[in-house]
Image 1 (cartoon, chains in turn red, cyan):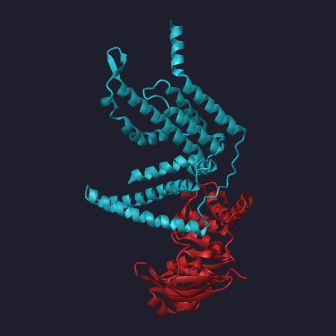
Image 2: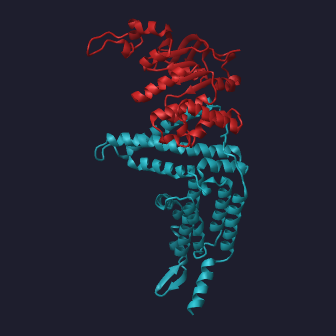
Image 3: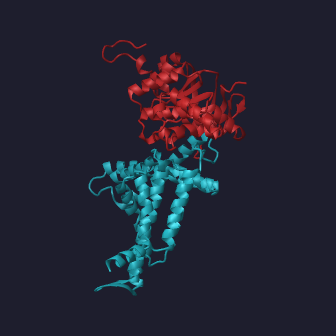
Length: 252
Length: 270
């Protein structure tokens, strides 16, 4: 049995106000894959992410994680297995200290305090944030908050990492550090982002959403070379694939 | 608005102290909570004209401030902020109760003024003790202690959410107020109508944000209870702390220390 597979079949979602956020979305992500979900603002990325751990219930269709369908009865198992890192770490960090915040998940899983502490230390070590453990989260910089938010999820030993705009609001150095960190993970990763250069570095596969539908699903490079597709979906190739505005040199 | 930002900074500063490591901060929260509760009960249980017997009770907050290395000024600022509420209770006493109780030479003081002063002093003492408790213990730890005292979990979790919501409200309110201030010129844009619109939006914004925070909690396995990592230990130190203070409070409650000391001084002088 593998928990590392995410399968979405014919998923549609209509919000109570009548907005069709997702229309017949289907894909399958397998063990260890690193997949980018890209699309313009309002394309349905966030709605899709909220289905992956059962926060939203499909209007139609089904989501499966590993061998389990995402339903009310499987929520606990699903939420342990799918770790979600929020776009805004301020929404995610709410305990008085970094250590308590990272321990929140493991303790909720019912681990004994010593084991939870071991996991917290390990997770903080992994994101290079162990020295921050006694600090209150609101005193951290944006980059530190992001790393702590990731540690908070890692401490629950998820099989699948779902990240919403991980590089959003980071300075170049913090962004570079984070990309280096994410490269080392061996989890199945699902990343939404407008930072397509980061996607190019981290993901082998991209799923393009436009107005709630899957417009393309394939190798990242193929998708980024298809300028017509990108333009139709209100996207552009990553900067590193565009020509240099100064010397006129071609990108990759 | 600098005002709201200052409030948030103050709130953070108040609770940040609880994270520091001193013997007082390390004490089991139950000991501090129990002692403070007994203190408050003793202070409020005096008769309404009591003033002199209340004065010695200042020793508890003062000792806690010294023991927890708290700074006095921010604490006083918060007390001043809260004082108007209890004072509202006694504001009409001087008008209603005009019976003269104390005659200091030509100055006659009515019972109303004395009871108002008594309310003021009690508020000062109890608010001070409560704020000092939060400073040296931290709100989540107080809630954990309440839970250990078998207060129903629903209430405790409500309190914790309320505490968290306070920050959400202050942060979102601060951002909106700042955005408005930057685009208001003179009094334009600062009137009552934009304010009501702002408050309405604030409700929805905090609502949304609270939803996101709740989602983040669910993602990490939240099922209606806040786990506590700290191991509670009500040891000898806690016992001594609680028993020592309790005995002192009861002694101060039973006998009027100010009067005894005053009497002694008068004896010596005579």
